[in-house]
Length: 87
Image 1 (cartoon, rainbow, N blue to C red):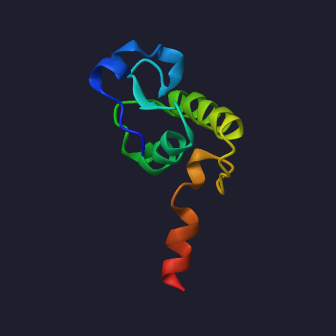
Image 2: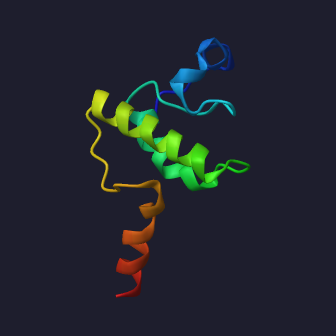
């Protein structure tokens, strides 16, 4: 993944993050989009409405950077793997 320096991160506008107010999960490139999905459920202190908005931002960035998402909703993150592990 492309590492953002603190200075680069500070220079990003809120709209460049999945979680704008918290400035969590930057969406600057395909690697960051995949990372945002992987870490999505680790973000604390956000409402379901904020998660819905963040997921829309991730979907938009995924289209822009041609990242295929297997989940249709943030509520599906980890569900497919969990059920596969049980089988």
